[in-house]
Image 1: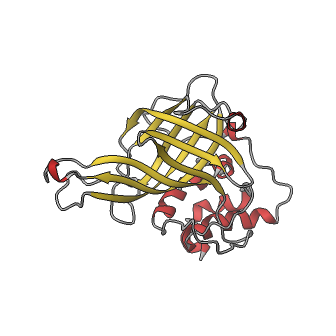
Image 2 (image 1 turned 120 degrees about the vertical axis):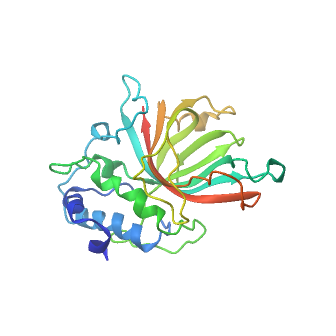
Image 3 (image 1 turned 135 degrees about the horizontal axis):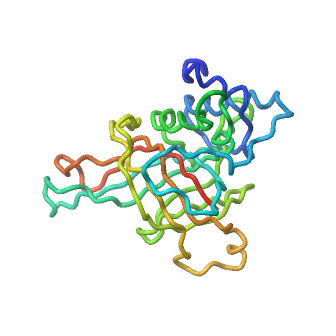
Length: 267
């Protein structure tokens, strides 16, 4: 039930949040669907509410370098997926696993990030989402089971994956939404806080990152160029799960760890 999943102090989210984008047939397990669906259910009866401007959102504080001067929040998404690793047999059991990148579904949480909570963190609603999501099964994108729009569902922004095995790519072009396609590179990282949520497989939280958007690895078509807004920097913060063990001892040649995180896009 919704009230069992959300702390009492976050009930303010339910009173002041907003629906975000069109709904899709994208299955997600019940805990996260209750969390986001409950927030949007309240909004359905609040027709006068307008989602706050994303530029007023407050990203979680960290020791990462701040966004460059002149940039403002453009989009915020919850990522839920897998961090992939390899342990080549030749490396030996004492070697550290090698990261192979991540794959994740991205869900639009821009409005949740903008909702002010009286006397508290403006992004309190979103702050709890990665911990809830990482404990829930990863959505099955091949399942076309319909989800009712006013009670249980997830709003799709797009997908995160690696192009050419080295380029973090954020494809936020979906069937009825278009937030752009971004190719990036990591510029800074910091260790996740000790209090960060662990994954459903017991993995610790992956580091927080700052990424810079760079030119596409391949030329874009004219149509694709129209899809790319002026996003310059992307942050991965408030991570939950996803980290590999310290060594390859007892690990297979290839394995994955469950993770969730907030992704903040600045333009």
